[in-house]
Image (cartoon, rainbow, N blue to C red; front, side, top):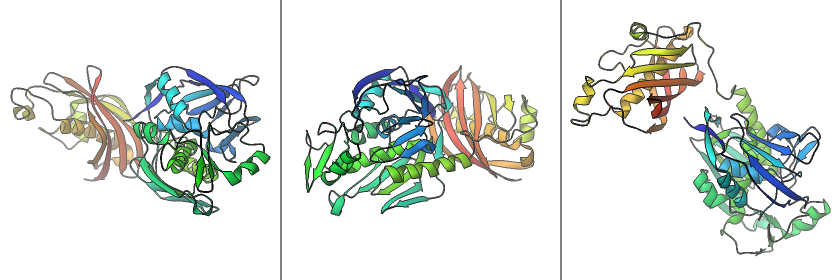
Length: 434
């Protein structure tokens, strides 16, 4: 089970904003679970806070601006892209102006700031939005197609005026890949767009130190291109930031053609609607009327398993229909120790998975509507075996349902010995009639 993450400490720096040109000091602070990303205006009375949410997006003229009441935050995409790309769930972003520093036009300095602050896990499951049905957003020749995937991937095609600087790049987004391949990509502008933007009062802080200018088939920049396809990589940087406004980490493949902040944030709004329709951040079944501990006879009254395949001795804690903690006393008399391994007995990892699945099945089958059914283990994701389990250990098996749809259930499970996690997994299983 992936946990939420926040910063280990606060860290900040100062710089100039791109569009307003103002000097600004930005500081990243730790935040509690389920906080998400929020911006705090330290320069205003009462220091108001604005949630970085798709519902608060108001303008997308060359940047993403969020507004809550009278409070505005301009150009939020780079800092929240860095936080998302580096695997941070919760942070408070305080500023003494209405726009973060542009730095060198990339997310490099934000990544460095995050690494300076450090990242720590929190005692709460990560908030995911799994795409199950494709979503297509189209606007003015731009297309964003969001497809189901087990990871977060982006495939992007950037096309400039008259087909200039057409570039394609495709990548999975992980902290390591983001830091190396996406964060260094700088913002860019086409020369013919510079005057119209200046006429609108934008890019007041723009220069060749924080942006690339494309003129004809050439580029004007203080330093050489960092990648031959730097433009499309920056587009992916923006996509990661803009889509994070949906409030969840995505399990999806984003296919983008000529993307921009407008279509990105429209997609984020539709994703946020899907997340809302899916229910609370952790989808919890309606509790069954019964709860409390179960002895071995009660366990065998629910599960069809028997020696040598019953991996649960008792349930010591049961919250009807939501979660349970089971116990398995691991003794040298277990038949699997004869062959696994002679002279060095270790409990097989697959049997720890089976123990998790049996406790999860108990949680499901104690629900009134599932009386008389049997649970079948279907798949295991994010499986990790951290420490060996030996004879004499007492295995505590913790399972919590994260979603239930008709006869399918998903559970976050882990096994512990002496308070330390020895294995964990996300399990999917189904219920059928006996």
